[in-house]
Image (tube, rainbow, N blue to C red; front, side, top):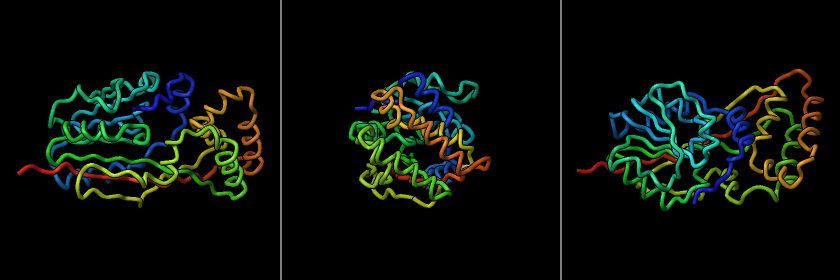
Amino acid sequence: MNKRLFEDSKHAELYAKFRPTYGQDVYERIIDFCKETSAEFKLAVDVGCGPGQSSKPLTGYFESVIGTDISKKQIENAVTNIANLQFRVGSAEDLDFLGNNSTDLVTVAQAIHWINTDAFYTEVSRVLKPGGSLVVYGYGNCTVDNQQAQDIQSQFDRDTLKDYWDVNAGHVDNHLEQFVLPFAGWRRDDTLKIVRHWSVDEFIGFVSSWSGWQAYLKVHPSSTQLDDIKSRFKALYADTKICVEWPVFMLMGHKPVET
């Protein structure tokens, strides 16, 4: 079943504001992959879309894009001013609003580890057109460009929060190595990355959106851990930007073309 995370209003706002967006190269890779087996770009469905950060870029390629997420609070933070983009609240395992063989592309960005893949893949196989594509992608743990700062971040992530991460979050650490797509000949692409130059405040905002930190806060609501990290980072970086990098992983498969 879908994990019901990121549904608190404040957490959803942090997610929408501070999570990194993917570079244009990720979407170009997706489109090039789609073109291998299909010339149609009518409908794309972004499952587990959150506030739509991974849905919006698809609108430049498809006539219509639908983002769907189980969290109503995430959808409430989604963009609403794009004519060919709409959002729905619903589970990944139930795509009954889509007809059989109706969809050119299904994407899942940074969310497949919360989904019941057996049920989801059954729905994907039903709704994709022959030659349509499924692309599952995400980003791994970030690194920063100062070793002292990296050590601080790693200690916080692996020690302070180690008992507060949902077990499924570990799939991000290993770049979805245990996941297999339902279509023969599917493949991985681990060549891309996200790079951002952030202020300390922006980086701390990103950390505050971690599900592990939000779970920690429920037990330790008065914790100053993140404030302490912020002070230490400001001492290291002063007014300079932090170079933050995330490795991107992509799993891509085509529904077979019927003959």
